[in-house]
Image (cartoon, rainbow, N blue to C red; front, side, top):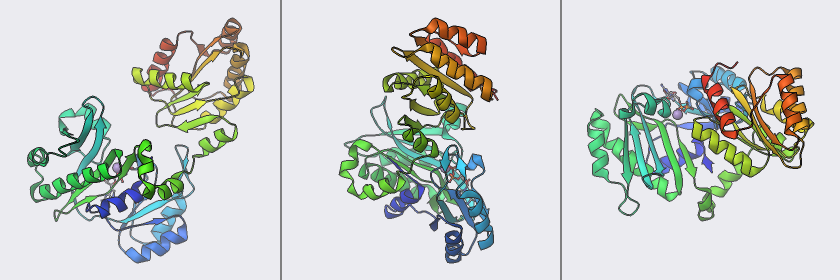
Amino acid sequence: MQIYEDDAKEFFRAAGIDVPRFFIADSVDGAGAGFRGINSRVVVKPIGIKGRGKLGLVRFTDSEEGLRSVAREMLGKEVNGKRVSKLIVEETVPSIKRELYLAITIDDILRSAVVVFSTRGGVDIEEVSRSDPGAIAKIPVSITAGIDMLAVSDRLAGMGLGAAAGKVAAAVESAYSLFRKYDAETLEINPLVVTGDDRVLALDALINVNDDSLFRHPELAEIRQRNNAQSDHERRMAELGWSYVDLEGNIGIVCSGAGLTMATLDMLNAYGGRAANFLDMAQVDGDGLYKALDIIMERKDLDAVFVNLFAGLNDCKKMAEGIARYSSEKKPPIPIIARVVGNNEDEGFKIFQDANVTNLTSLEEAAQMVTRVANDGNTR
Ligand code: GDP
Ligand code: MN
């Protein structure tokens, strides 16, 4: 279960990690009224959307009218298949000296929690780990002995944090206590900033709680209920009786069968591909495939769509017809790569060939091809 920025920041504050003054607005009037309480320069961000900085969704304004206009623009807007329903409006931090990255997470290989820390915060940590892996410190945490604060202080000492180093160390310690308290899988602060006057504040916040521990956290039930809102896609797919979950990659997935779908996602992942969704569709015929492609293609952040179906009782010919019809009628801007095999696959292959849709027999080859095409990024 994900705990979003506003709730996470309340937890941070309670644990002694400083956060700026903020309020939540779900309407233009609410934003206006809230502004009068802060009455200084504010930063506005939609809650529940990832990578807002890059998407141009971190906005600054000095006036109530300015804030109302940002709220009018953002609220109700759809971003990557998610509708913006809440904004966090926060007093800006006037002089940011450093932007740090801090996370506590579980390292599957070390089989322990780790503190991940970098002086290159603010940006995508995945990017830093590729381009400058030395800039990321990883400190394993013993589940019995707890966090080794000497090791943490040692690492921080070399990072030129000056007078703020002690406060950063305290934030690391508090973050770990929260991580344990809520049975988190990940707790991330990006950025944790150091100000000109050496204050240390969390400007962003994310906590992921292990779902298996939720019975121990009745205090999270209300948050869970409130956040259970589905994306537009999730709601529409659920109405069709299909299992669908939005993910964050760029490869749209059309599959049937939960097992095959999971295997497909795992295989893509192994080749370096990133799925944009989980879809276990129930209507595996021409119309069903047409509909599935039509909905999946609405997302504008895809670079390819991967259709992976195995026909036991179903008919590959009908599936191929649906995909071919979609492709010729809608002329999608990105490639569809299919691996549709099983019952009547020879007829299916003919249809794919005539329609110029790539269809492969081997799942490995198809997964590799779609990964290559999508990672090229030049498909539109
Ligand atoms: P994300 O892109 O969704 O992770 O959104 P963040 O909340 O992390 O904000 C992205 C970037 O906006 C941060 O790294 C900061 O550089 C900047 N930012 C956020 N809040 C403030 C603020 O109060 N003052 C200033 N000057 N910059 C901010
Ligand atoms: Mn961030």
